[in-house]
Image (tube, rainbow, N blue to C red; front, side, top):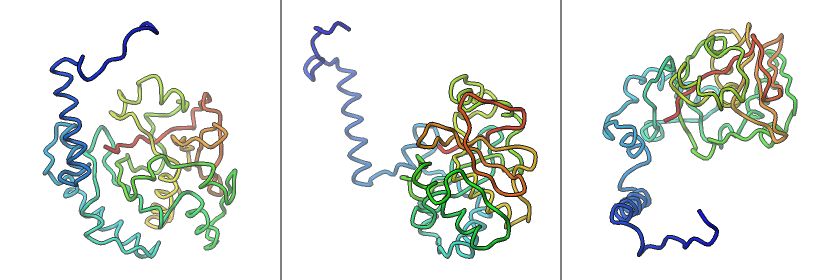
Length: 252
């Protein structure tokens, strides 16, 4: 478009464009008035019934997280909180539920690491002790309590081995392999480590390192692994290794 081209105004929009803008304005108004929820809108956009309760097949897993939050984090998460939780549909091999509690319970990785250190059941090493919440932001934390689906295995996804952070973002293979564009964030991986260890007495990633989709404030990607302690480290986003892998995740 030329720098001197006239800007489009409301009067110059075609009928279809005006109709689309009117529908968008109406949708925003409904969301603001809570006539519809973001959950219902997301389902509609995904060609799903907005009234279908997809959390029903996960009722036992949800009950497990309610007990985990109460016993582990002193957070009573009742039906009122869970009733408003959006649980995505299974996609690809992502069929295991993980629920992140509100920020008042777990704001970030430091909260989980601090609990581990206080219990002294195993050692923890991080590249920024006490500053992880500040240096590594969870870009989904603004959603409050939220759910995701993942593969749920002890080691990171075999299908995503030897792939760099950049490859997962750019080459489209992640969608072909796992039918999702996303991988788990660092806080999510640590929460899964905590949940898994309490359930099994074993740590994640004995044979792999999980490459998360979180970047620190210096632009490095964050990895999590077990190497006689829980390690939270940094790596260059272009690097890949046969023992590194991501964990695909479905959010919407």
